[in-house]
Image (cartoon, rainbow, N blue to C red; front, top):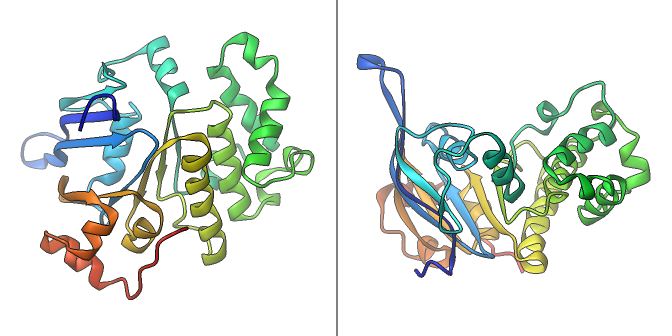
Length: 262
């Protein structure tokens, strides 16, 4: 794959927690490339290391070994203003949208915190940015901005978090188990929204999930993670139709029917 095709690449990325006999290697030398304008699903069961890998990519954790390249630049050790610049380009939506809110603040205040990452001139247009982002995720801005978290459904909270990320116009969105707490109908809505972001805005998405069925429905490519390592990766159709690794086959055995979006 050419450098022009890649938005993000990891090289030998590893993370170890603890010391001595208590040492746990959560991520074990991962090489992963995310292509521009594609959705890559990172699939693995709980404890496989996928969420730790996501936090390494977000620069919320420092790696023990290896490096992260974003648009050809080494961002492994960025700090301070350089890391804030990186966060304008790379945003995340996590599993529990309720935990992302201050429970007594209205949605408008929650969204306003994201504006701090933008230049001052852009922050001046904060309200229009909020309204446009909420409209993009299918929410009525006038109604939603005035509400507090407990007044929103789980699906609405998750879409507010997507809107918060979209206000920054990131080039990469990391969705870490972003649909696992939603009911089936809302889950499909959020998956389709992620597909729309890829198709309409050319956004690159890393979709972190334990559900191979969701990965196949949404993703262009699938990377399977087991015990901290990527054990298989490739186009979604190929990984599902002709899995090469025993662990991938075991994940497929738990998915009775697979369907693609679109």
